[in-house]
Length: 243
Image: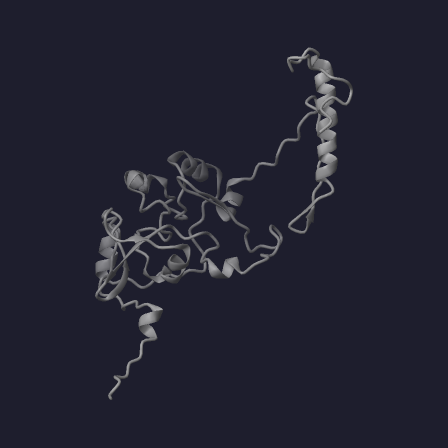
């Protein structure tokens, strides 16, 4: 890079002795870099780079409102997700089948699973020594046996022991969206038209015992559900070989 295009601003000890000349040289370096980067293409899209002088007034980014965040953003303690919506007047079409693979468009929460006699089941979040966390593929495949919660969305940090006591204070009781903090939740409720959840997912019919458990703010673990078996087990030969 032309770090001394207009002359050297350094002495023999490589210390700056002329700040005005240093700024001019830095400006030239920035312009060269912008020119190089503008000739590149990333992911099929052209790059447009421009050197901006320190004295230039920076543009103010457009701030998105809470309604936009409710449709596009999900936050948790250690993860921020920003995903397109299906409204083409707002976002371009998905370039992949992500919205078809991931229910609700966002990554499913990390869940611990264990294998019992009746099949694979979700572990009780309060039992920190039970089971193990499934991979993303496993969580997608086993989405039908997630532990049920009093809200329609499973809190993303449900299996994080250090956050267990603060989970309920981070969930909107109207739209069931989970937030990374109680402060973000209050901002959401204050500055958005918080509508009840109206997504495509349907909630299974509940019996009287399930309704009672929901009212008591407890998690539900149905040990009497239909067994889930592995694909290897399913493909096993059911016939006995006789010599």
